[in-house]
Length: 280
Image (cartoon, rainbow, N blue to C red; front, side, top):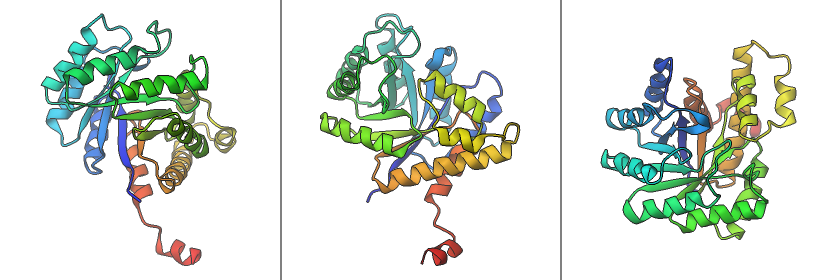
């Protein structure tokens, strides 16, 4: 069974840039398939974001992907931005409609993917939603939207954060039955800061399962305990998805130094000898 592709998502630093660059330096030791850097996600400013993408691309060995949200781009400016990134040497882009109160129609990304595909030889990733997009009319129309993006030329789809392996696997089955044939990458958020992760999940229309709430109860302020619990949950999720032949694992690192590398090392590492003997 082929190993899944690992990728990691970071966001451009507005403060404490040293955390961002520590993450970058650590990731260089792990050789992920790519590192995506958000440009406008969750309402963040694009100011400086593309400069950060170019700096990572030109100054590191990491394959770099610009995560571009279309909300707020004037007509034609989004394509100009992607062309400029391609001209700077980037060969990967992740295209999303945007979030919150975006007025863009559901087929806006498919239309944009088609325009990029006609002009540029670039790897295009799009988003997919195992629990359906919060504003989708139904699970079927959400899959229609995904299929349209793939038919327009997307090379892969990266999922919203998932915490339940079965939920992602059921979504994968439905997507394949719907005609989606591109690789599907599962989005993984290691919950090493429960309050921050719960807040982000809710903002994205995803709920942390009850088992997480029970496990983290009483751990406020105990960062070492939360770190270990979060890695335990994320590793178990990734290991299950790897066994099921998932195409890729996309780690939402939230610029937390060490979290993505610790997860990748843990999932890749062989079991300790004592564990092997016990299993035997």
